[in-house]
Amino acid sequence: MFALQQKLELKITVSIPSVKVICLVFAMVCALLCLSPKGASAQILNIERARVERDSAGYFTGKGGLSFSMFNRNAGKDNPNNYLQLTFNGDVAYISQKHSYLLLNYYNYLLVNYDSEELRNTVASTGYSHFRVNFLRRKRLSYEAFTQVQADKARGLELRTLAGGGIRYRLLSGDDGSVYVGTGLMHEHEEWENPDMEQQLIVSDLFKSTNYLSGKVKLSEQVSTEGIAYYQVGHDKSIDRFRNRISGDITLQVKLTNVFSFKTNFNCVYEDKPIVPVTRFVYTISNGIQVQF
Image (cartoon, rainbow, N blue to C red):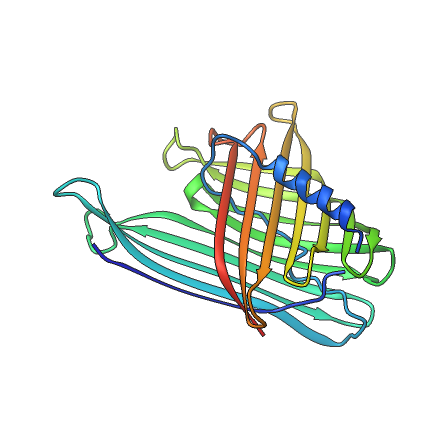
């Protein structure tokens, strides 16, 4: 049996602005939102991770991470299993005097029995690319426009594209924390592979209301956390009902040295009426060492 794992994560990031009690309550809400006895894997976009709150302008900032792992596990004396996994995430932001421009990217690939042509199987191939503009970012009430492309082959999501816009309102802001709320409209196009009907795609086109509550808090000089909760809903004429999606993401970061930090992330997604019969609630928990400079 062998095990090899390498992980590299680079980050150039930001000050976290005040109001610890409010932000802690928000973090608890995100955590409670994601609690469930069942799960699989999830990917949810946290648009706050690439945002910065500095007084300066006219600069780029970002972070990137790449992890690679290989390991094997026996599924019986003559039935070994081995795994190859690659995960990439990279966020870039440009901050101008009045506006901010965010490009967020994520990709995860998992291959089982990579050394056997007969048994080789791609278990997961998921990812997204999201572009967002925040107009008049310094004002208490600002405006947003966004577009996204996404796929999650493990769950049968061949393609999801969306585009929309809305408003963003700063509820609280200070030296140690901040809380924002956003609401808007978007058009979402999805192509799902039905597990009960091979080679048949189910296509959905819906206009949706999209809403979020986000927060950041600096708990101490060494510990910080951030979270976001989404609610999206749209009426589907094909079933004459509303389709609801609730999701949450929360990250806890502990500063070990000036360079290294320990990071724990928990995210989840719940859909009450999936387009195809898949698991309604999925989640992901991840831990890692982060390099900052």
